[in-house]
Length: 67
Image (cartoon, rainbow, N blue to C red; front, top):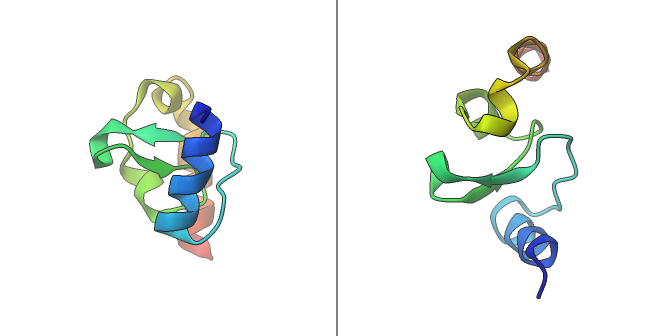
């Protein structure tokens, strides 16, 4: 099983859908829960793949809160 197969399987288990966002990853801050910018936990993620572009993250989080 590849890492993406495992990721997709975990997404289905935890979120009921496969996450396909630009910042999808297993988040160590949430016990390696698969997340991306479409899920609630994303706004609290401080992982390296997110923090490099904080302006983009702020915009995505703001859009999530306005939905």
